[in-house]
Length: 409
Length: 113
Image (tube, rainbow over all chains, first blue to last red):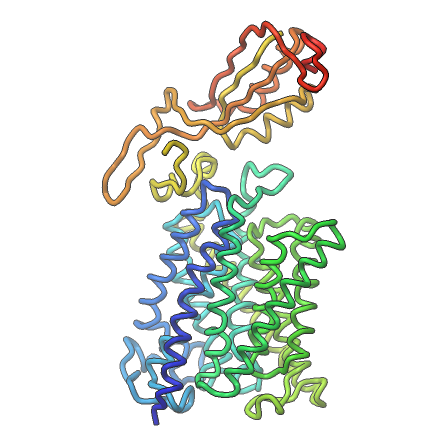
């Protein structure tokens, strides 16, 4: 039976999640040098275009059609059989296509998250090939394993409410793989380039935070108590993460920064994602407090030590924060919050933490290997990098024949 | 006293600064400018309309030096900014009749360093 309230909420949530990709574009766009902001905005925009089409043609079928293989089945190609009646295995009270389009927005933003790792140096044609291949050979199978009927991590009992594993760990570890394959930006010298437009980073953070209500609370797939729980803990973890990062900087570097508060808020949102429908408010605060400590360590200590150029910290925030969130779900999940979930370690079920570890491990290993292979393949066929002169002039002029800012009028 | 003005590629600024510090030239003014020489600028396209000859971003350096520092300064800029391709820029050396440090009122060579 289609429930009008549930359907309305899932459609609104789909719109909210769609807005996260342009939000991410400004979040990342503000961080790059001003010769490369259009490159970032265009990559996000085209990801939205290309992957929206991939999803309705075959991505949704590969991800969600019932099947026990690497992918889901091919029964739902071109949305055949995906109609306006509910499909009870996924969501019993909304039209099947509402579930499909909601999931489609996740499939768009996940590859877009990886952009942060290879920012400022990737050829646009290679980017299109990469996102299409990555969505098909990494996102779709991982999505199927965790959420699809017949998926092996779903059968195992892994909890991932809104995509900590499927979206954040998956994209975050792919980010590390791509940063390692493409190599460092040239001419960046000893000091990293500074963000050219901090207000855009704040704007992007605000849009992401706003859209994340759809991402997490929408993942209840109904306008019910679980959705409200997810909404409340999402806001709380974002707030705690933002505050926590700013405090860490204040203590360590002497001043709290805007960039730090934004990074912390996003890290908090990442970490609460797998847990949002399973944990209560105090665990949400703990998750938000600690995620900034872990992510700050990753981006400010570990990255400089190893020297990889994950330019905008897609690995440091999404993989590290997502891993913490997935494990925290195994610690703090409670059937008192969601009877359809499971109890975690602190509620007497240590087994759940092991299941979470297995899901995290499987995703890390598969995504790292497959992402590196796909990226390398694109490098061989098309070539990943723009040449040195183009990189110096910037992606805006060389890839798109435009510039973001004029100097004279 | 001389005033050294240099127009360089934006991405070469860091290297030029490094070379200048090595040559112990620490006082420098930097501004962002537009221009083109033999490079003839770049084409940009907006909604299908091609606009050719658009000016390229360049960096302009101004450095006031005493006469014995002219050579090291010019050498440092050249080393830092050179790629060997068109668009590397130019260095102009001008006579500088006077220099006054605002804080103390000192004039001439002592006011420069």
